[in-house]
Length: 329
Image 1: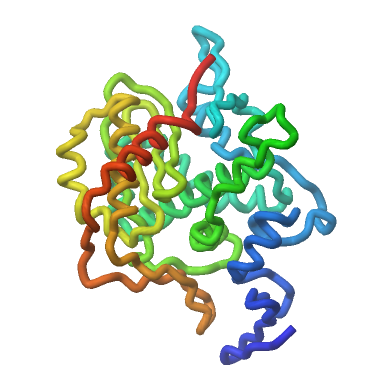
Image 2 (image 1 turned 90 degrees about the vertical axis):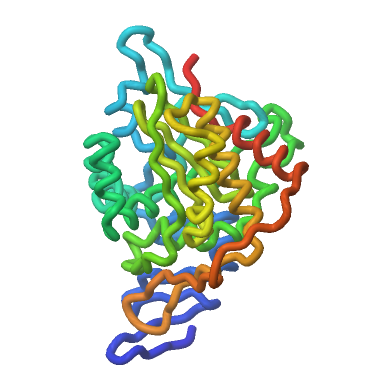
């Protein structure tokens, strides 16, 4: 283990991961993220091995307060149970849609992220739009959406493409986990104390919904997702440095609001597709030169798109209208 001095601060460096002098994981390297978090049994927030946890708990992939507030988890009229559609057309009851983490980190995420986000969303679409005009509000929403995207993918480590076939590969084997390293850094920023440069925040769109509904879908390859909260929906592209936002007006002209469940998923497909067509991608990284660390972005002078690829477009749209959507049954 090497030591790195930053003025009066002493860091310990192990395999390019950086710890405080008290042993707190401040920055995890990409290799250690894959080894310890993705393939290991460490808490996805603090990085401690499961044997060191005082207590363990199940972290809801989608927060419990969200479905309770919008009366979707169990309809008072129809007693419907929330289900989520996983890749491979598998269905999972919402109550079982959790990943393991230590109790301490579960409480931290609740206090630092979930509680302020819940207040933001409960205020409705207009309140949310006002909050997203502020640096703090936009950063918090981005962190929360990165957290959800990360958890959905970590959950897939436990599910097979054909669940009842022991020889079937795990769903997560098709993921390029290196593309999630930055998303993981953002998702755990509340724990690490890492700052977030506004230039590193992804494109966020708030769209009015027709005939209120609840839905969650992500497009893994396009690092994009959307959540419908009743009468409005939030869309986010996680790793574009707001590059997709430059094409937002032309995209929304193709799928004008208010959106239905079907057109919302189509809009998500368009956003993910544009992200995958960015000719020069932003460089997203954690600047560990000074304390506190900061997540930054080096952006191209202007976003330019590669030529239209009909085959890729079709695949992205299939993904947007396919797995990991919320249903009732």
